[in-house]
Structures are given as C-alpha cells and as structure tokens.
Length: 72
Image (cartoon, rainbow, N blue to C red; front, side):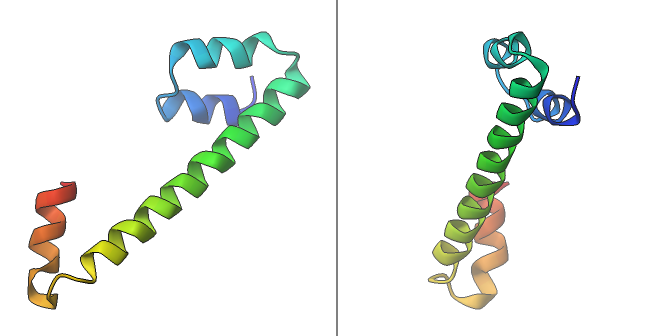
C-alpha cells in the first residue's frame, strides 16, 4: 500500500472511496491517491484563505474571539 493511500485513510476518506482506490492496480491507485491528496490540499488552502478574508472585515481586537467562535 502506498503512503498516499495511508494518508487518505488517516484523513478520513469514506470507506467506499478507499475501497475503490484499493481495487485499482497499484500504479493507478497510487496516482489517483496522489491526485485526491493534491485536491484536498488545494481545498484546505482555499478554505483557509477564504476564512482569513472573511475575518479581515472584523475589527482587529475581535478577530481571535470571532475566529474561535466560528471555527473552534
């Protein structure tokens, strides 16, 4: 099993998606897992950027408490 597939398991990818990836030949499974990981990283970066942009409209002293209330 490739490191990418192990990483997807740790990130909580649904079991049916993991089963599909694992059913593929090893080279295709590894390539698909790498692609999915890249997409997840891109999504995480975009969400982080959007969150920071949204917090920029909040006055400075209140940003940390608002961030904590909204995003935990």
